[in-house]
Length: 381
Ligand SMILES: [Zn+2]
Ligand SMILES: [Zn+2]
Image (tube, helix red, strand yellow):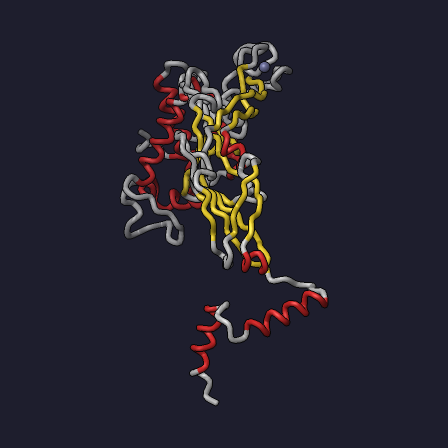
């Protein structure tokens, strides 16, 4: 489109113009040929594109130097080959090369004016909500009220964010797109327009009700029904309860991430519950009974058989967790741990000494006996 016209001529500056002079001249011309000022004027539009293309090269010291040396050839397809003027620069555009990228910029730029993406429907974002419940709540199922942030269109300004409630003028910096292309060396990145902060419009007198945002932030309360038997780290999706869509876009979804607090007594593994119970050596040897609470707080009597060892467990059928979408329940496992007594009184020591002397050649500790029989042969002397 601008092949035959020199960039300097386009910007109406001398070849030795300073960066400042180029900028000044570009601004003046951009204002003059801006499509907002020349609606429907194809010639002005082309001129506008051309001066932008020229300015994009000349405002960058490195690119301007390359242009001075090689002309537009420096930016054409395949121009990066043998006589690469950009040695030492780290960039790697596959295929298209610069010319494609430029035209891409401008087609975006032009297309994004008044009727660009800003007027299109925009879906609301999903929201994540972390909810911690107790093991008892997971057992019984529970209904929780949660408060989630939400927005609604400001009624005072009809969503325009302006004091007078009318649509704000289009941002001149980005032509209403809300985004601009920025050049970092030879990389072109799209960033939010700093002038309008991505809104595409610049609000001078802000609506006091919404502080110019056009939306009011508030909280909404939702009831979330958590089914009995829910597992730790479950994600529940609640459709349409995320951020509101804009201009007819769909609402996002709400995701409730459920985690279950550690319980004082029970450890859960799927449908089963485990409880560790310390017992004395006397109870372990002689047997006995203990009472423990179940997950609902009811008393359960647990029988400890005589000769119980550490890690031996008693299974209590049907006293475990509820199973999701089922009438059944898992099992409760009582895991015994024999506790060696400490801080003995003289009398206790005396009795244990007596017990030890009576147990010497006895069969009451079969595992120990087997062990000592095994190691007897291993002593050399
Ligand atoms: Zn802008
Ligand atoms: Zn408002």
